[in-house]
Length: 111
Image (cartoon, rainbow, N blue to C red; front, side, top):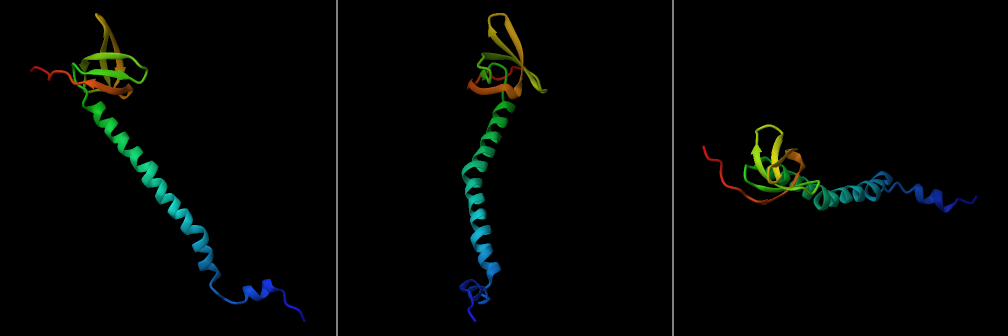
């Protein structure tokens, strides 16, 4: 009687489940770790620094909005809005989250 080589190899009992885990799960885990350290973690750090920058915007700061408007902050309330002067006597209201960059810091608020 003739036995095929495939049956003979499977009958060895070499721990097929362990080999399956090592060949499939471990590489995916390594790929996830690499993606976390190269993509996700730096993105989270940039988001935190952006939130901190937006939170610290004060009157007199020169800012650039995400729409490309450059203006000087004339009023920064505690709520979600700021007021920008984009030209002499031209003021617009803008949400804080729309600030893309703070170009220069202004003077401190006089009490």
